[in-house]
Length: 305
Image (cartoon, rainbow, N blue to C red; front, side, top):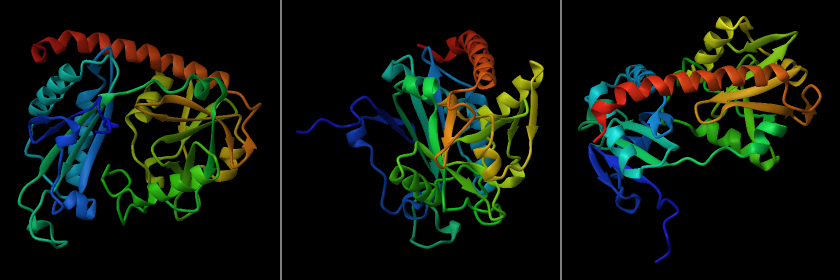
């Protein structure tokens, strides 16, 4: 038998832990049929979940955004997550929490659902290649635009991701790491799975939520950290030209932290190397991670066997 690509993974389905080859979902599940689901992704440092309370709060907010109540409490979800982390037992893990509206009769009406399903995926998370941080990554501007807020609100982290899939496909076809997505006004929103930032005249700038993007947890953390450390932080609409002509640029997400961008649409950013202000902000973030994990160790004992 051919080894599973996911042999290092573990899946929790409605509270039951199963190996990946036994993890199944009904073809009648609305998450499969319609993308009628919400999800969150976090990671671990030293085997401990990072900002889990914040991720669970956003999961609940996403569920509310599509009119779905979560039948699991934060405490129940936290216990399941710690149980899974102990079973995989790796210092750096990827944790993906998915809640679908469930199965039922086929039809768009949410009332046809017979109850939500919970899936949690645990697997070892390799470190990002060092070259991404030493040399930066390249982006392109996608032809596919980001969903407008009045269609599927990008601030709801839902399973409806087809426009992002098409956008990153364009990026890969052009040999880029990721793609920037514009809104209907032609302003930059975010990349397919990360928030975008630039440095312009010494000021860190990132698009506002009103532009139509996911309010990244790393993004919010960096805005706060920057202010605390005396850095100039600003949320404002950005044009593709501003990004291409920026002195520095980077993308942020939980699993990437702060990743430098050194080329957009084939145009070199700054001097073509990761910028000093980008590095300074990343250093502040790494110190913050250490602080959070130190605090997590104190409260983790009640979940550990």
